[in-house]
Length: 160
Image (tube, rainbow, N blue to C red; front, side, top):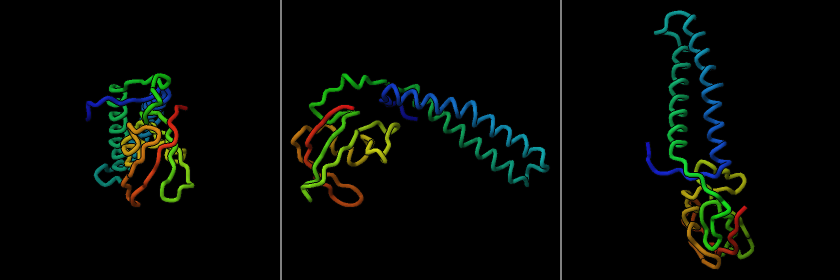
């Protein structure tokens, strides 16, 4: 497991904590119940339900350990103190597509644990996030993505 800090907003931390609580108090007992029920079905060596439940338990325990590890490394960030002179974590960056000059797109640069691609909240570790991070208004960037080369001009940087 990594020892790098995990930067989250207060809401992002609360979401991870709630997810961990749900895994421990709802999912863990449910899987234990499935294992117990499957144990009563007979010979464990040929009991597919038992083996499936044990595999689910191992997967769940890995998820719990991963969340506990992340939470132990969380560094909460006060979003209001982040400057808007450059594209930093939690910044909303409006760009113009230089290939068609018309399309304006906004991306919100988020920690990987808080991304929501459907709402244009992208990870700072994604190709676009890496390409925008640290840039200023007026900068032109070329970002290689799996679909090809994106060419953007940064129009505006703001916070929520």
